[in-house]
Amino acid sequence: MLAGSDGLGGISLHNPHWAKALGVVTLTLILFLGGLDTEYDHIRPIVWNGIFLSTIGVLVTAFSIGYFIYCITDFNLVEGLLVGSIISSTDAAAVFSILRSKNIHLKHNLAPTLELESGSNDVMAYFLMVFFTGMLSSKGDVTVASALPMFLKEMVIGGMMGFMAGKAMILVVNRPQLVNEALYPGLTLSMTLFTYSATNLIHGSGFLAVYIAALMLGSQEFLYKKSLVRFYDGITWLMQVGMFIALGLLVFPKRLIPVAGVGILISLALKFVARPLGVFLSLAFFKKVDFRQKLFVSWVGLRGAVPIVFATYPLLAGIDKSDTIFHIVFFIVLTSILFQGTTLHALAKRLKLEAKVRKKRSKAISLSEDVKSELLELVLPESSTVAGKSIAKLGLPKESLIVLISRNESYLTPRGSTVIEAGDKLMVMADHKQATEAVKVCLGVD
Image (cartoon, rainbow, N blue to C red; front, side):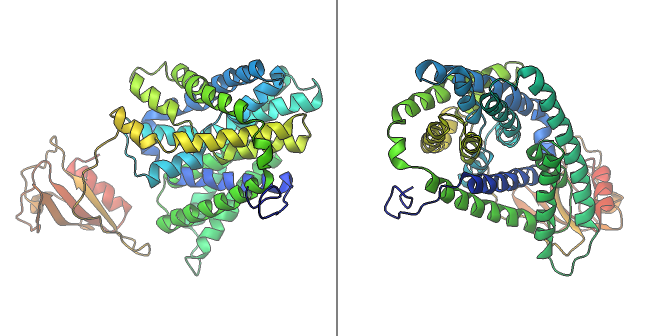
């Protein structure tokens, strides 16, 4: 902002088209990384929580804050609902980065719930934003009756394309033996961008398709998975930096001052009324989610790059007051990151939702990606029928070997005569996936 045309730098970049394109690519990569780094086993217990938050929660938030904007400004109802739609979704990049960079560990599956919500609720917000933008630009030609079939079509096509793209990615990444590991990021990157573009071309939700494809790919073991996650983590951060520079240059600081008062009121209403209302209503069906959890989820309604990207659409459509909308949205994003983003850790402690993570004396061994064997740590459950038996009598497959036993904070060197006990942590080496599954069955470990 300071380097822009209103600031000291005097750099002029008044090109919403370029900013929108950069933002779409950045959001695509953010969603892909979020899906790739999310384990399906972690989100399976809270899938419906995330779905309700990303649909009902977004709808309630958008309409309640939109009506509030209509009441306190000179915007008409549709314009107010347009602003509400733009700021209704939480930002995946902000949620992912703050939870992980602050090393916040949460109880009750709150972390996967927040990540699933922030990764999937952009679809509903995008649909609402496009719908109200269409209403304002078409002067009444777009109606709810005409928009609902379009929404359902986008969801169905996006879901199907995401499923097919995910299957294709798994096959393509595991099949080719490329001459260099460095080629795999380019291969997956091209498939990710193709998935988004192809889905949009046939009028589906490209964002949904990319997220579903990434979830499917991330739930599988494939070549160079760790290095690919690191690559996308780095390029996503780089894209965010570039996008915020571009968006900062698009903002006129002097135009933020007139909307500061309205922006503060909208921001307060969003944080303390609209977002909590959406969260409490959408999670009212889940008895296991108590008041403290709902309160914390309400506060983690971080707004980041996504609302700013969405705010470029009315600019490009030539909507009246679109410039004012853009600056209001930018102001709301700044206050959200400053106040909500910096208080998450303290609030988690205050509500006693932070999980205590026991510090480990040693880290798990990270094998080279080229090694086909698997090294896994298994805890022998109390119900195991092999507890009290010696290793020689376990009947483990020949392709496996117990290499280390951890018991009562000490380590034992396993021998054939070593008797294993319930609660032992066994470090097992297996030659392949089938041997791994056979070991789990033999030991009675899920």
